[in-house]
Amino acid sequence: MRNSIKNNPAALDTYLALCREFPLASIRNDRHLSSASKVLNGLLARPKLDAGSREYLDALSDLIELYEDEHVKFEEPSDAEMLRFLMESKGVNQGGLVSDTGIGRSTISEVLAGKRPLTRKNVAILSKYFGVGQGTFSLSLDD
Image 1 (cartoon, one colour):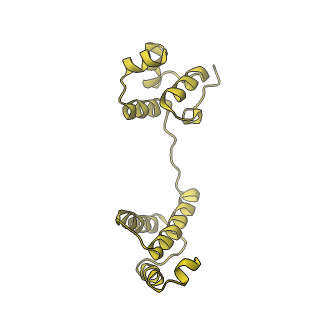
Image 2 (image 1 turned 120 degrees about the horizontal axis):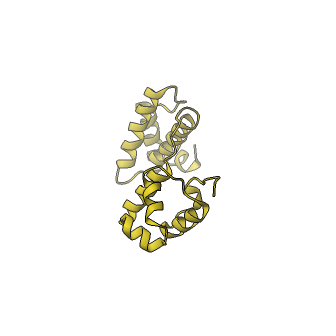
Image 3 (image 1 turned 180 degrees about the vertical axis):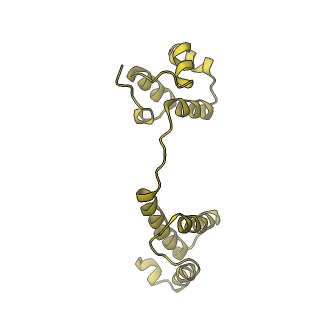
């Protein structure tokens, strides 16, 4: 616990009240994770947090992250899913992407259909175009 709340009675009261509602303890299972996530989301939805709430939020976030790192596996999106997401986010359609990047229409179509991987050259072009790191896409070993 930081000194900022140890020396702040109001913040310490808030922190301890939150601990009584949902004790800070290692997350044991997915049901416990769900409960912890609800508490976390409730805190994040508040317009303003005092020092005690922020301290509690930091600790709860750490506990959730530790559990998820060990027990929750997130599937990486395919290049097709990532490209679709980036196109939607930028508000560009397939024709616009072809004309803006110079990547062939058939290449974009096949990537979006999951029939073809992206080449290193295409990844470099798309990364620059969308303003994302090249690690956003997987790379084919066949390029």
